[in-house]
Amino acid sequence: MSGRKCSEFRLQQGREEKLRLLQDLRSLQAEVETLKQRTTALLDSASAGLRATFATEVQYVQRWLDRLTVPDLRDL
Image (tube, rainbow, N blue to C red):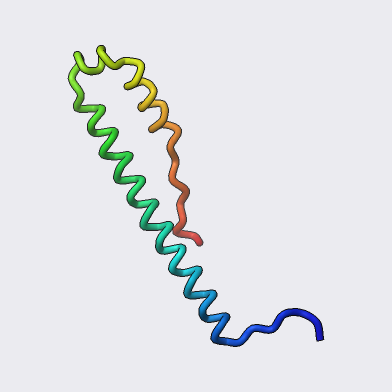
């Protein structure tokens, strides 16, 4: 016989580890989305003077937020 054999215990450990990692990824995904929303709200509430003073930085952050996409992990 060829191939690698694993006990049911090892297979279960592997499944549990994958589930834990997926839960960690989903938690991080939610955290990134929350931070994105908070940053957007902060930029939206900034005064015109602050926006004018830091126009380059504001534009940079807005472009970065527009490009920031969090993959949907619900289907995994």
